[in-house]
Length: 238
Image (cartoon, rainbow, N blue to C red; front, side, top):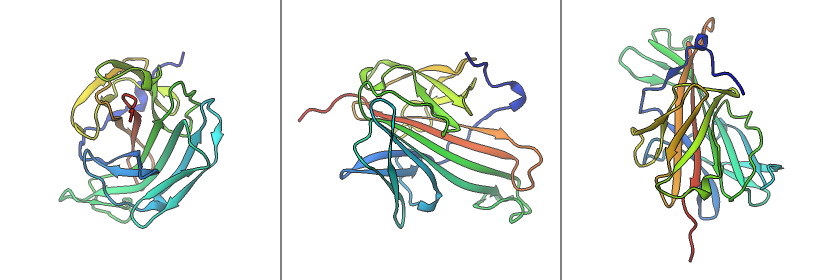
């Protein structure tokens, strides 16, 4: 059993509800990468997708390519995946004294009051009984402790939040990021565990975000992480 992330890391919870998240949705037969907040679905630079990984039911990797479109990205696994993960490197951001955000580090925004580098991750699970591999590609990961597709709406799903592979204490989880992005459903315990109610028959997006202070970097003073776990709450029958 890993020990919880030590206090010297000084994990600061992300209290800014305006921070954008990342997830994937199946639209018109495609796996589309969505960058948004709540109901917002915003355009983004597809080159910011820094990695994508697809897995079969046994947790073995399936080749996947990234189609970089003008305003978003689309993931194209070689065959239907049981699970799919994606990462976005959002670069450095600096806040000016008038509270505007600029996509650049402190060297380009010398009057910044806050500078950080943000990374966003998402894990989608599509098949019941899918075995998950080690999620070391996701620096912040929400790992289900049972099959989320077998839980059912209205029932609790036990998850574990990991930061760089270690359990993270005190992380707030949003149980329905699309519909209620400000509503905290649970907070992780000392070993990174929490129970989150499955909200929807359709797509569920459970999300977490936090900041990690950085010292000795001339460009930023924080790392910002966002991660989501997505799955369908109940099977659809025609």
